[in-house]
Amino acid sequence: MLLGAHLSVAGGYTKALQKINAIGGNCLQIFSASPRGWHFADLSPAVITEFAAAKKQKQIDPVYFHASYLINLAANNRVSQLSKQSLKHELKVASRLGIQGTIVHLGSFKKDITKEPLPYENYDWYGDLVVNIKEILDETPSDTYLMIENAGNNKIGKDFGEIATIITSVNNPRLRVCLDTCHLYSAGYDLSSTEKLEAFLISFDSLIGLEKLAVMHFNDSRDPLGAGRDRHENIGQGTVPIDTFRLLMTHRKTRHLPFIIETPGFDDKGPDKKNLDILKNLVSHAKT
Image 1 (spheres, one colour):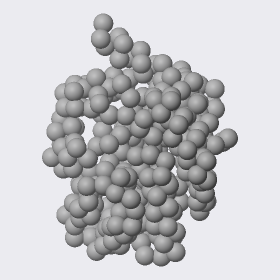
Image 2: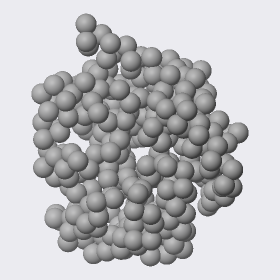
Image 3: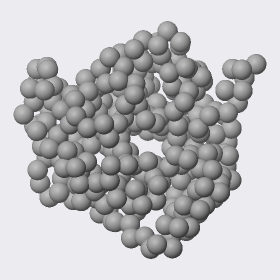
Image 4: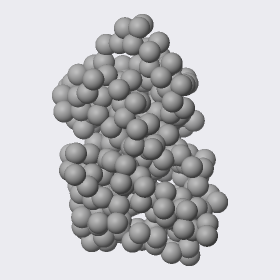
C-alpha cells in the first residue's frame, strides 16, 4: 500500500524524505517553495544528487509537488502569466528530481458559471484555461504530470463534468486528476458504502477515465456532507464516514493508488504518524 503525507521542506527536500520515513510513510507530497507567494525553487546539482540518493535509499516513491495556492489559470492576465511561469518552473524541477509532477487547484472564474446553461463546452471563458494548460504542458518535460485537484468549494473542479471537459479539451495524456476525500464530501459525494463507491467509480470512469486518476488526498472534513467548504480534519475526527477511507484503500479499482494525508495532526503540527497508523489499522482489520 502506498501511504504518505504532505510534509514541510523546512531544512531541505531531503529532510522531508527523512520525516516521511520516520512516521511510517512510503510516498510524499511537498511544496517546491513557499505556497503563499511567487517563489521559485533554485536547486544546486548537489541538492539534486542528495535527494535522489535519499529517495532511493529510503524507498520513498512516488513524490509529488503541490502547486502554490495563488495559481489561477482561468484568465489572461498578470496572475495567469505568473501561474504559468510558476508551474513551468515547478515541472522542470520535478523532472530533475524524479518527482511525478505537480498537483494543482486551477483557480476560479470571474463569472458565476452556476447561472449559465450546460453543456460546459459552451462557456467561452474555458478558452483561456485550456490554452494556458496546453502551453504549460507543451513547454515542460514529458516525464512529468500536471494533476487537477477536485474542489470542495465553488472553484474550478467541483463538478466532474467540468474536469472532464477540461481534460478532453486539452487532450494531453500528461493531464491527470487528484481526488481529495474532504473535497468530495464537501461537494456532496458520499462514498461510505461499497455500492456508493462502485457507482461513483463507474461515473468517474465514464466521464473522465479511471486511468486518469493518479493520486488521492486522504482528509477528513470539519463540515457536513455537501457543505461546500474546504476544511480538513484528522482521520476519524471529522464528518467523513471512516469506511470511506477503508473502502478506497481496499477496492480493486483504487487500492493501487498513492494516498496522501494533509491533516492538521493530532498535535496541530501537521500530518503525523497517528493519522497514518489509523489508516493502516483500517486495512489491517479489513483483512482479518
